[in-house]
Length: 250
Image 1 (tube, rainbow, N blue to C red):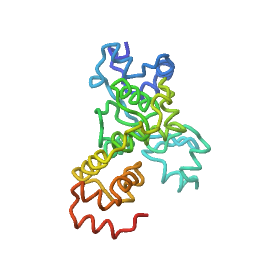
Image 2: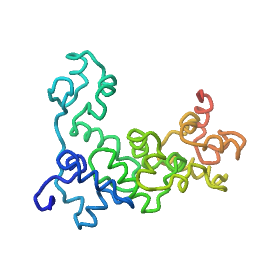
Image 3: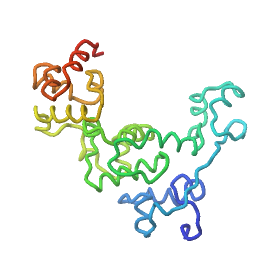
């Protein structure tokens, strides 16, 4: 009905106009989500009307701006952090501003294209559920080692206390996608493959970068005696190896 009435059907617009519909959609068990409901109704996401608000309301004085950072500081003398603590659930930036940021930061290393234009709690759940249906590993180690969907993991831990909580909210048992690396996951060949992938993608292979992205650095040293030797066997240029070996790892 809403589709034929040409109402916007992106998640934030429906939450604004019909919050009870979104609440009911995400309360269903087993989890279906918003995209799942539209799919079942035969409504292609690419054809829905999208509405993004261009302003955000100041909960203190009722004024509207594209963003509240400057207004809060100049007029009310409070920081954004203090404001959000006093008014939980409020927003600092308009949806249109957030959508611009989303375009710049959330479209790299994707397994599947985005269908929403900005992050929301519900879109995190929708995307997790869709990846799960496709059989994509969702444990934390997989995110870091494979380097896919970094923005989804970041959004998940922003809207939920932990990644496990985000998984559980979609009805996924966190123990089934537990964070431990499967036995036999690490081999010398796998270390070389991951290093070569990073080199070919022009990603940093510094010790600091790898130490923040899982166990690759540690395993490289374990299998090859030193990280420099692992890089050499992976085909890194000698000049790069020398530069990295002289650079502090911390």
